[in-house]
Length: 116
Image (cartoon, rainbow, N blue to C red; front, side):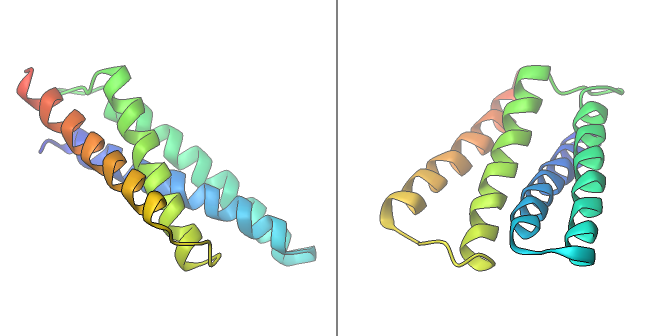
């Protein structure tokens, strides 16, 4: 796994964190709301920068693959944060489709690496 994939994975994690910040902003007021807003801005900027960086350098990830994987990691992370932090429901179908998303992300990484 080259460095760009690690950068992309970290960017996807930051995407989940900016979604978490949005959820927390809806639950708070005052200074706490301000802190969650600031964290949102930091996580959005970091996530986008890392997505951008993953598509450059010596071993760039193709734009379509990078975006799909970044969004998929963010989606998986956001669902998991929703389950553990916001106590969202855990149903068979949510876990089933979350699993297919994870398999698709892995498949994109494997086929993108194999194409080089």
